[in-house]
Image (cartoon, rainbow, N blue to C red; front, side):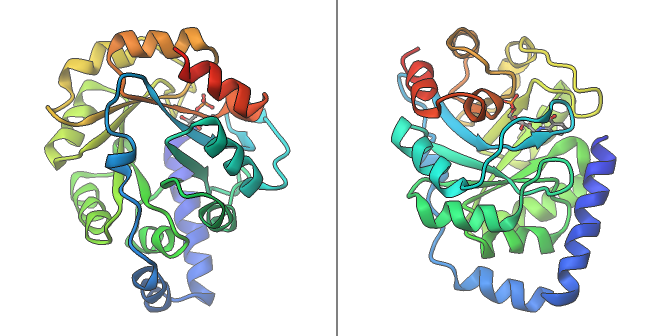
Length: 256
Ligand SMILES: O=C(O)c1ccccc1NCC(=O)[C@H](O)[C@H](O)COP(=O)(O)O
């Protein structure tokens, strides 16, 4: 599934490139005001911070929510105390788009993550051109050379990479990059199996000083407490927020 999602994302970016060539996207990326400092926004504190996700549907769960106004949802996330916003921009299985990201960027003052299956410089330039402050790199989807190339580009553009791992080996590869923001996804992106204990088993492998993000499967305050006990600095939450009153849910999560 991850290989298919990544290949589809490349094909879709290639189609966009036919009407919006690399040079144009690069110019738009460089013309953006400086990115918001996501490492500062997610700096470890005395409570677990929340990265709140705009998520309409997913391969594992199908349709989750009808989100007609992502900007309004993002404002609710900001009001509820989220520290950053994740926007799924993949269209085929998640129902997202770069237009969603641009709308969210205009609506809030929080750092915004482009959550997609990125594997080319073009997609990274697109992220910055749309106003993203962060871009996701999924270690399992990238060889070492591509990972290093995209990590360097994200950094050069003044953005922050959220480098995602799902095993000890992938976490070591994230650490070898010098990543400062590392996520462990509880969801296996091929089988969709959820393992909330994976974060705790890997936590000792995070490099010193890196911000530790626990991704996926946060459905209740108990899950936030579980990740907090395991050492998470932040959690990334989609489903629980788009299927509930987001302000109330954030407030419950932030009270842990
Ligand atoms: O969510 C999926 O089904 C999925 C399938 C394949 C690749 C990625 C997928 N999701 C991306 C994410 O990692 C989550 O959207 C994110 O961590 C939030 O998860 P949740 O709170 O469980 O909705």
